[in-house]
Length: 262
Image (cartoon, rainbow, N blue to C red):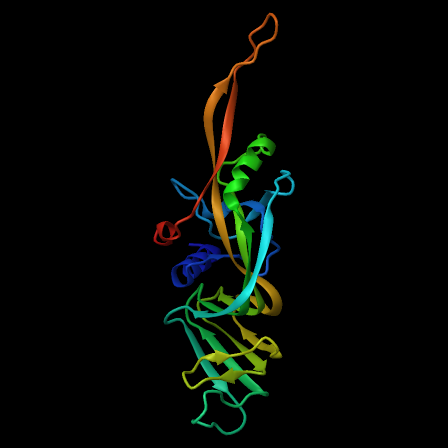
C-alpha cells in the first residue's frame, strides 16, 4: 500500500476526516477533483493525492462559501505503537502544574514503521458551501461537456492556523524539533500558534510539512453521479434529428467507513 493511501486511511479511521494530501496543498472549496490513487475495483475512494479537473466558478454555478470561525479545534495524532517521544527540556520540572518548562526545549520523535504518522494541527477552522443541493440545478445547465465519472466536489475545507506533519518513508527514522516546545504531565506535546519551533535534525527518509501557517488539513467531499433521466426528440420541417440524451448531475454523500478496510 502506498504511503499516501496509508496516510488517508489512518486519518479517516482515527479522526473521521478526509485528509488533504499532502497537507497544505493548494485546494479551495468548490474545486472539482479526482483521486487517481484511490481507484478500487468497484469504486474510487477519496484517498491520496488529488487532481483538480475544474471548479464551480468555471461552470458558472452560483454558490456561497461560509467561514465558520465560531469554534476552533486542534488535533494531535500519532500512529499506534510506531511513534515515540522524548522531551529534553531545560530547567526544573514542576510536577504540580500541567505545563512544564519551555523556551529552549527539544522534542525527539522516532518512527519504527514505514508510513508512521505524526500529525499536529492547531486552531482549525472550516469553510463550507451553503445550500449544497441547489447546486444540482446549476450544474445541469453548465456542465454538460464535463466527464463526471470518479469526480468529487470539495464542499468544505479545514485549515489549521499552524500545523506540523511528518510521515516516515523509512522503516526507522527520527527527527528533532527545537524551540518553544512544551510538555504536559500526560506526556503529550503542547504548542500554541505563536510558538517558534524549528526542525533541528533528521535521520532517515520522511515527508515533512514543517511548522507552517494556514495549512489545509481536511476536506469534505461529495461524489458526482451523472443520471440520464429522459430522451428528447428534436424536429425540423423535414428531418427527424438524432435523439438527445438529457441528464442530471446528482451529488452523493461519502461514507468513509466503507473505504477504511478495503
